[in-house]
Image (cartoon, rainbow, N blue to C red; front, side):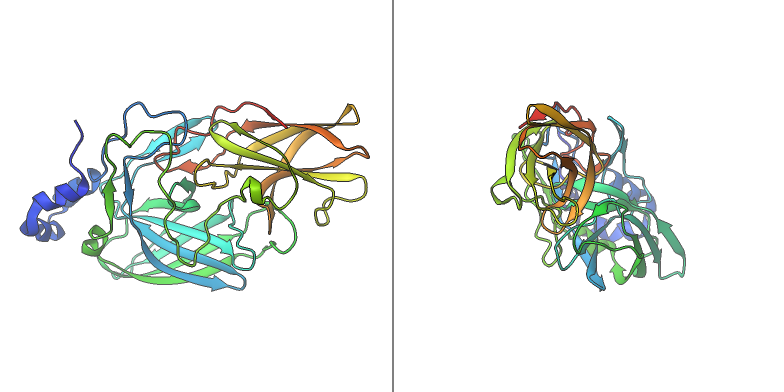
Length: 353
């Protein structure tokens, strides 16, 4: 039997009960720990519609040079860490106040920076300073971002400093950033306002079914979506589905300074179905046949490009036209997952185009 939704719980509590939560820590901890509906039963090994969706509050957006950072928060919620092909579920602790999220992107190219190192430091109204190193995460509403459940402290104004060390991911064109980026924010934490954020308990006949909820409108922020096959910026050699993910393979003889004479750049874009979010931090390899022989057998390197975005690619030396490309996902995406993605993108098979 399903637990009542969070909205139903709050309605049943009544106005007197809500006013009492501020002074009753034990009750508050119980309410925080039980606000999520149970996980859907018989979750499929693919992207599925989660048990609920949450709204979020944008604490602010700041720029540093050509880069932008958005800081937002929502209710604390469960998520899954990924270690190899295994997941570790992280449940909400009684002291968790919010799920704090950071997204960073290049404003000139719209390229999100997966694999960056992010650190958050926050100082509350009591003068206490704490820090957190959020996980790189994947959600159906936000795509790739960094987030974690955080215990803030008393209600009031919080000053937040976000330090972003750009990733060492190979980059092309004008996507390079090497120096650490600093972003400063200030927001007011108020539990009553947090409880007013939208929260939808998805009907039982829809939750747990293959699919995904729509991405949220991030206004001026950029989502980490891959270019679709019919709008791929280089010639497409073929597409496939593997591990519940979509794979687009392209090849071009002209790719910035990476491909020279008698060379071809082969790119593989791995993304989620439905919302087309990139899947970073995986290990991909490929074999390439040209002129009746195998001309390449090696790794596809994670790469950031202004047009292709985050993808996996390699330079192939051959004077002959490429005849066949076989792509293997050797290690699943090592990115933490929000509900709806924690069962997907693990069991991959080779794709030949």
